[in-house]
Image (cartoon, rainbow, N blue to C red):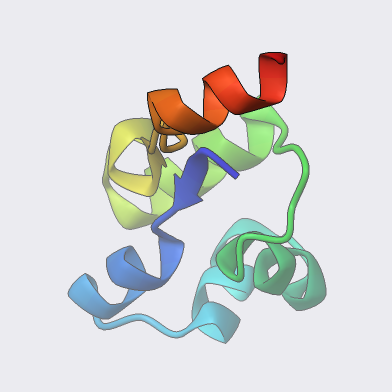
Length: 81
């Protein structure tokens, strides 16, 4: 997945537990855990806003775009034949 969730890094930097964040923003611990592990397929802006407010950060501090590695040209040529 090209979007990397850095919630774990922000929690560590803020010396905050996932449970504490859950209590502060009113989001279920299970849902935050799914987000933290990178298994979430989407995030509501309201959730992102609540996390940013509680952690005093920007959305870019929590999410990072990591482009997928491109295939070498040899493989692309072989596949098109």
